[in-house]
Amino acid sequence: MRIGELAEKTGTTTKTLRFYEDQSLLPPTERTPTGYRDYTSGAVARIDFIHRGQAAGLTLAQIRQILDIRDHGQAPCGHVRDLLDARLADIEKQIAQLTALHDNLATLRDEASDPEPDTCTADQVCRYL
Image 1 (cartoon, rainbow, N blue to C red):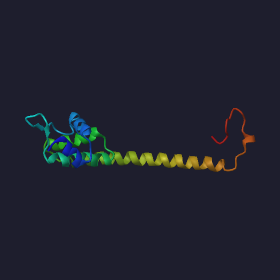
Image 2: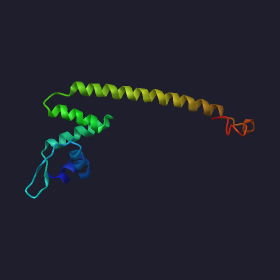
Image 3: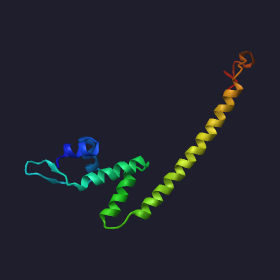
Image 4: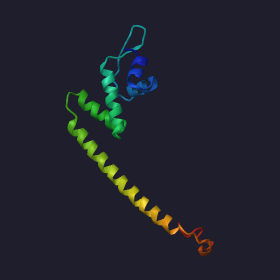
């Protein structure tokens, strides 16, 4: 299939597909005698995998690592598990940071619920921050 058809089937753009090829996420494809890219049906599954990896928060570099493992005939399951473990740890850390920020903001807002501008000095700007 040509690049436009592949883009339509995978919900992406031709520019993205060229980028994926440049980044070695898609292997170089055969060309027609007139120079058009001629993708196989396997490209659809590969792009779907790339999109699922991105949806899981993996970087394109991490996705390329997984694809490289598979392309060398090995199952990447252990590597994927390790990447997902690391991603989960990152998200849990972010959640903890956001929870702390939320609690801090809620406390500041509660303190500012009945503003008393006369209690602020000029060098404080606002005593609630």
